Length: 261
Image (cartoon, rainbow, N blue to C red):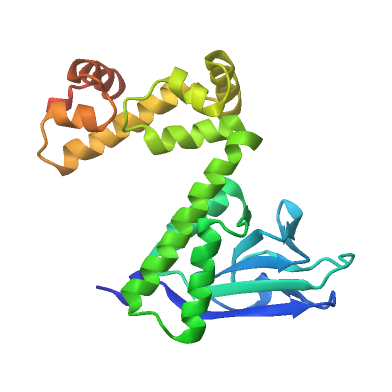
């Protein structure tokens, strides 16, 4: 197995800054794109700048970045408190797509409040690096993976109150293999079915029903190509209540029956 698959923590430390001199331009760091960092604000306030502008990074929030991109970060000049931070930098290896997915879906500044699962895992990574207690590279990679999964999950949950339509989008992506319907999803979002359909369609240029159907059918096509499972079991594992409804939907999208796959 190639070593490039594994994630390796390069460094982790706590720092405190009281001067605005603290700033970095990632485009000038001369490192590779797979060298990434997660930097948590413990006290005070930092900032992060990318192509969309500058964003504050207050206590309980973290910035995610790589050392080979056109972004920068530092301490906010007007902050009264010193900027106290904890960071973990790593060669991301095979976890790069998940790291990038978090940034794509939620931005480079994310919630990581004290007491959250993600904060606990982040602090464990920091402690195990400084104490040299990773059991092996499998343990190190697994712990970093758990951190990223927890971070993604917590961002999704945070959107339920702040942006129920986005929450519904992520709910569909996470639960399409279950026999859910739009009424249930709208209830999970705290809005009416009609409101959810209208707002989802306006935002994503596709109805939530069409989005859900696409997720299920793409998953089913992958299963048909990769396994010897029968059509009935693939239909059920793709979120369809019956193989008949699955066959109709599959034929409508791909122009052939699933048995002809």
